[in-house]
Length: 124
Picture 1 (tube, rainbow, N blue to C red):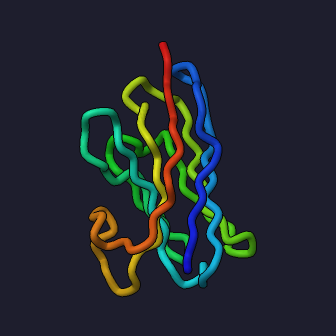
Picture 2 (cartoon, rainbow, N blue to C red):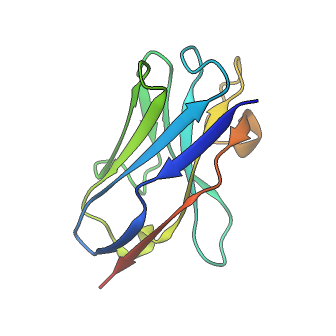
């Protein structure tokens, strides 16, 4: 059974940085794309970033230029470096493992394993 565990969330002032980690266990890590989604209070979960197993990255317009997704296949871990944080980045952040073969990396239905989420709160 694949397990994904996020960490690194917390409270940060606007303009600051945080790095989230997502550790995978119980299954193959290499060979699968990994995504980060986020859900703000009262809003639907939305796509933030995606990385293929070869390291190609994609971002939502709202985080492009500020967030960087990366992965360390030797450590079965994917990261989300978040810089220049804004109030609107406040959300629960989830990592997820994408189903092989699906190209719809922005869609939640393309992922079959999810972490429990980590809270990121940005204050003014």
